[in-house]
Image 1 (cartoon, one colour):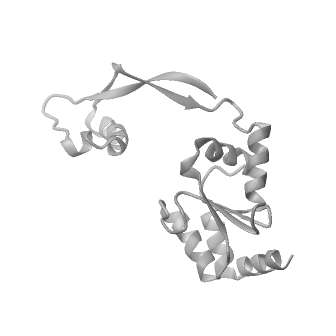
Image 2 (image 1 turned 90 degrees about the horizontal axis):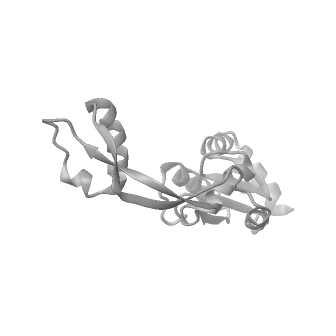
Length: 169
């Protein structure tokens, strides 16, 4: 991974536009609000010279041989592995929570991996599975699907069959 300097934009609202202090004090909401307000209110985004930051950026291929080995070990560590935002006890995304609830309702023992804790694993897994979003469910070492596929398979009874076969192998 290469380090590069990134200029963080600062908001310059047009005359007469008031920006709430709660938005300014919360960097997460500022990122979202700055994009949406810029479109709606015609705000001008200017790079701040004092706001240069260093961030890691993935190269064209974030899946190194070492990372591939690590992901293979994680995927095969248990019969059912869920890569998700958050943990089974504290999901940080509604889609992750849906898959957790499905697996819990089937009484499936599974390993949960919080992809928010490691950006390399998060980016590498997208390439490893050729699936761009999370959660990602692996059963018996094979990518099964994301939330929508898991939900459909659960509703049709297919998920329970696949999990039972995996547990018995």
